[in-house]
Image (cartoon, rainbow, N blue to C red):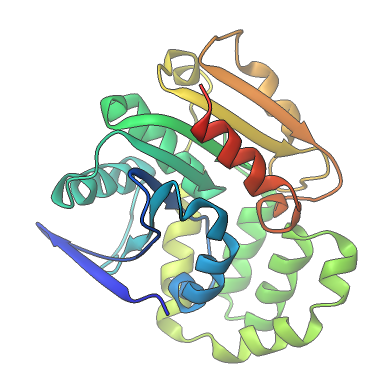
Length: 261
């Protein structure tokens, strides 16, 4: 069983889990979640078990004490402070969705801390994203059932969504006011994110994996990336935004990318 730890630095309190006993350090930054992501800690450890021999794996939640506006730049600076507090350098960084935005900002400002980076289901520009704003409106109107249903429908392929009705119902019943307030703040941060110009300054070796059927972030957005020896883009098909959860070879691709030159 994995334990939940808390790192405290300055005014930041950030929960994380740690597993594996490899010499290399892998850091995972998850995406936007309606509920507390670390309550799935044992499922996460099992999902990333193939990394445990080569890596010591850390997965970080967003900081606990979120009030008012919380920009992605601030999230990146907070995770940097936590990494330094825990003496984590030369990391292999994997992130998904909102986490990829934090990772890019971290890499642009503190790239020396990262050995390699992999971004799952990312975008260069989140401003005015209609699906994100639909979720925010559901949350603001306290339409929790609609929010949870839409979240699953927009993130997962149709077959998985249709087979997840009980999970969606249970999720909606478990959400509290703090979860919703936190979700609104984090989702709103995406509306200020645009790295279309900055992305070509990225010096960290990066693998991007997006799916053609992702309705949240259009893979064609990545065509704005100029040819760059540091950035490789891998487009898959048929798994939606949550390809990182359901594509059976996804973690093998990550592992091979991280351990090979």
